[in-house]
Image (cartoon, rainbow, N blue to C red; front, side, top):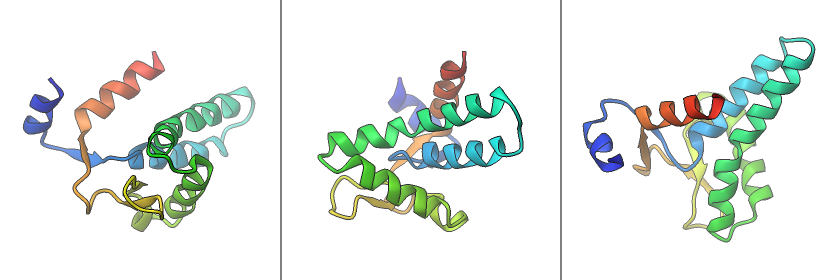
Length: 118
């Protein structure tokens, strides 16, 4: 089913946890404009999105704290860091997953995020 969707997908997003890190960054930025408990809830959801790249790093035998720190730093640089995700094949730990052809269909990501919020 996933392969069929990937072949038929008209839109893709970078894989390797890149889209989750970018969404986490955007949610943290948005939560700064909100007061009260809603800010805490949004921050917690943003942090929960970082579990995906953390698990990828752990499963690859990398230091997850170091990888998440590098990804946060790279994603804070704006659009040039938006496509960076976990690199399981190098000691650096991160790479531009879009340029490395590590892609995921947008439809699958949308369905995962919708299911996570319900």
